[in-house]
Image (cartoon, rainbow, N blue to C red; front, side):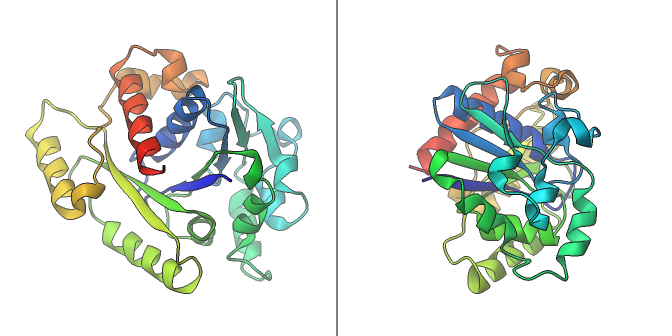
Length: 257
């Protein structure tokens, strides 16, 4: 039965999608069966794997159809070019679907219900959720076993994190008592600056043992890989960014045993 990990942060630009894509890639490389669900209307996880998110006809069934109840999740799943690694894609239409969902029955558990139909086919389901505390994000939390929180090592890094954790507590109390914070990963870490070190120390002070030892560095290869439609490990497996995501994946495998 799959372990479901929601990667979330209400701040944009913290490496959330990059982490979702590369974690999925390295879990699959380690022979786990992985499903990545692109649940962010921006569709960056979809395009980051070389899939054209602005061509609905080519995409076929997407997460919009799944949450609207017009298709099953299994219909939305397609294989990537990597062994053991599938994706359920999305388009910007998902933002419109979120508005329509507000008047639907079971609006908070639509993603959980969908994932439950395919859980036995995977070892991990990774959800790339929107950078906001929205209905889609709440769906993601309710559907998940774990939250993974990427935090950028820059000024205001922890701004909004307290609110996110309060939302997590509310979800645990009302709908998903088994939800756990898997950990916090420091992203865009620049060892040349004292600011990165200061912020990382603040993260460790706040989250203690929940902070991952692996930090994700600022790395040109990590930034370039999505424009080529591939994970950084496929783009340049010897880059610092690729090595960091490989190490982070091993830590996550240990924590989810």
